[in-house]
Image 1: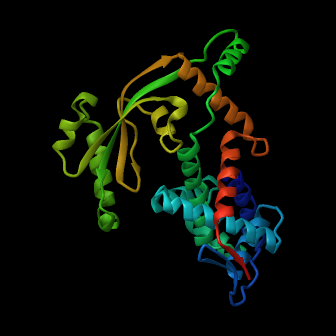
Image 2: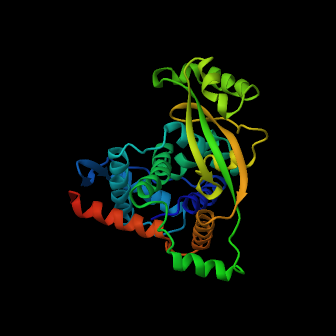
Image 3: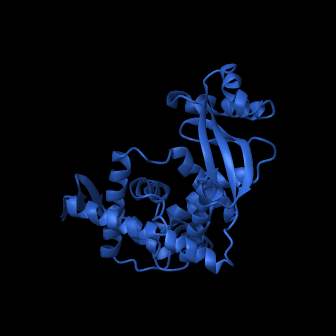
Length: 314
């Protein structure tokens, strides 16, 4: 499994160099079908774009490697669609904008880099979408990580001077200013303004549903207890940076959302200890070669999809 952040960071470093040196991608000949994955065609044009992408990452960029990567990606994309767990286009666009600004480039300048390198915006955003969506599918099937046994938990605590680690426990609600898909382009700005204005008036979680009923198309979802390591990456910075009882807003596939922080406290129970230890294991594995349970499960899942798939090479 590709580490999305690492792969995209490497890509951007090479892409910025490509812009500075005036590197242009190879001209594409007329596309021909190179493989069919469960009815989805992968063309020579797709392969050429992926080769250009790999070159910018300074990794092996032969046609076979690019084709196999695209086959894996097609299988992941099909499975993501089957279980309805794809990130929204807005999330992908926001990620693209963040990577651009993180490299002191506008999205337009990044698009120029992609085009000149022979990758293209759509190809890169397709890669981002799979990298963001696939972990959701793996986690839904296998759980975010394998649970620690009681023996492992006690052993880790013994290594920690017999102390359970401390983490923050939150009680959360999700406030959603719903935007119908058909009106997304027309009213997103207006809804974002309404959501921001409501934060200063938020009466607290006990009155949240009554408060939501005074506004149009606003829903409240109780998220319950959530430990800091469990908070999804897209929300975690907003929760940690929250001032008062609400986070900043985000535009999602549902509409404009923010989280209400009903309460928070420091805890050190067994569940908290397990979550902290699991997060430590994940952090340690990030520099290694796909050794974490998530990556093992991802490989297992993908192997199953490959065995069941109809893959025809041309």
